[in-house]
Image 1: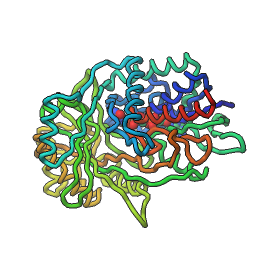
Image 2: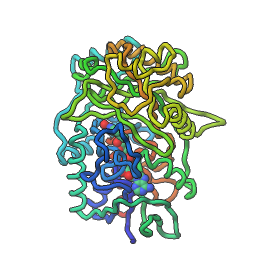
Image 3: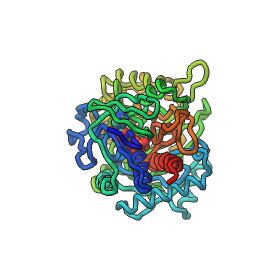
Length: 458
Ligand SMILES: Cc1cc2nc3c(=O)[nH]c(=O)nc-3n(C[C@H](O)[C@H](O)[C@H](O)COP(=O)(O)OP(=O)(O)OC[C@H]3O[C@@H](n4cnc5c(N)ncnc54)[C@H](O)[C@@H]3O)c2cc1C
């Protein structure tokens, strides 16, 4: 098959790139290893019984990792990426974010926002800064896990009706370069393309890195975020939720002066398990209709490695593997009280607590057996400090799940339009190391498409 632009990955980045291209009449094909959004279903209704499918229904298919997520749309340039790393001003990125938001609204996202300025927001900012914590505010929307698939499906059908081609259930195994085109290898034959936009997300980032290496694409290592998912009674978060649905806090720890941040808060949500090759990670989501009695958020410590070891992915993966080994193939669960006392949790200790875990396919254990001391201490200090803002988070029965790791460490030096040093090869979305969420992933997809549109003189 021959095509002008091949897009690897039907996540938000790939979908938005395709939308831009087709609107300018540029032929494109999206290849994804997963299925259509509405056909994506984790085969077990209880995520505690994960069947370790390949590809994973949670992270693969039309809509990407975002399709089954609860779709918290962060609509400020301050969250999910960094304008400078995209060689853009905050104003330019904000303009693109507003554009992406408009498209989502057209596809049916509810026009309701959180995190707009007000007295309560100012009060929260004051409280945080009094305790040396930065509160990053910004406009947000919340689609809800039970609605996200429908929105993505509307998006997908619109793209198809405009002429975007999709090749689903198809994995790209290799990317080769011939004299005048790229050859994408699949089990069902080769695809030849003049341009490639690689947007395989976090799940495909490691694979892409090896492809980039053989193609001679320059990459650099960046930081990763390692930590835990914290679960506590939903009532504790209520006062903050009124101000900002997914509030972001950032602080520097006293002992190591390391940056720790909260990430992906799910009011009345659920903790989930994600399968990767050789390890498990935790995450969280919240539904619009079905609610739990708990709220969860990630507390993540930033890790940056310098000479002689710079490969943060390798380091993060080895932490994830160690944690998975200690957890007997499952995430580790520990009560905050046990974490502080330095003893392992057991089911009987956990069952005594006020907080009932929403993820039960876990092994009660000791997180400090699985993570470096520096990270454990950073998490302890951070939760203790956060207690001044999220009052009650540092209570005995709070639950910690590990490991939660965000890999966006491999970065590719690119042009302003996401083009790598290899001509006509673009890398966008989370796999580019330049986005950490749906909105920025979409923005980088739009930028890559704009680059091709410019080259094509459209
Ligand atoms: C449980 C969960 C909850 C989340 N909640 C939120 C949230 O509320 N708000 C938010 O902003 N972000 C959230 N995120 C993160 C968000 O989903 C991602 O940042 C975003 O989807 C990244 O978009 P992307 O297009 O770069 O890649 P992805 O969405 O990851 O899509 C990549 C696609 O590429 C495909 N692919 C990979 N490799 C290959 C290959 N070799 N061949 C063919 N196809 C391939 C995959 O199947 C996948 O469909 C969540 C993620 C998870 C897992």
